[in-house]
Image (cartoon, rainbow over all chains, first blue to last red):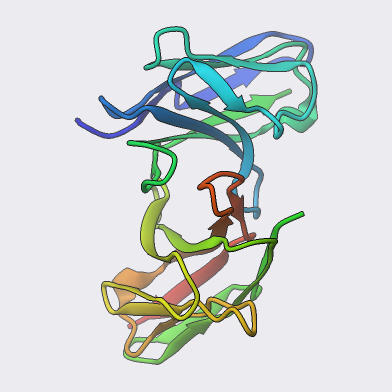
Length: 113
Length: 112
């Protein structure tokens, strides 16, 4: 398909472990966004990329969270030393540019036991 | 900082009823305003948007007008259908298209 894809769809891990969440944006979209959505809440902005660089990472909650987009396409969100409070759905979105509509992926549901 | 407040749900309506979901915002400058919808089992989709004061966004029978004087962007539909059952999110971005802020969402259930 031509939409944003995210893998895995579900991830269960233990407290203290390291996880990586992957996002494949729509081909040709230069802007890529990561959000976190807790149960009953709206998406919370984490970070966005314009090309390969993180243009705004002000939403990352602490230094355990890091994201990369080395070739300006696929992005990986990395969480070190996971905590139970990190449990949420992590959403990725992409857009042609920052002023265009964002297209969201289905999300990765992360559960930290 | 910027923020979005929307009416708490869940909202339950009968088919063909009139829908209003209230949304108010706090922002500096001239934000763009959005309504996103999340149907069961699907990802977030843009429903409509407005980029300046007095603009009306519309799609699929839904409308919302950007009211700067009341800092509101209420979502309306004249006659809802069962297929409109979903969670609706009001959101804004700053005038640079950045700093997206979403409201908590309002769950709508439409009964036949």
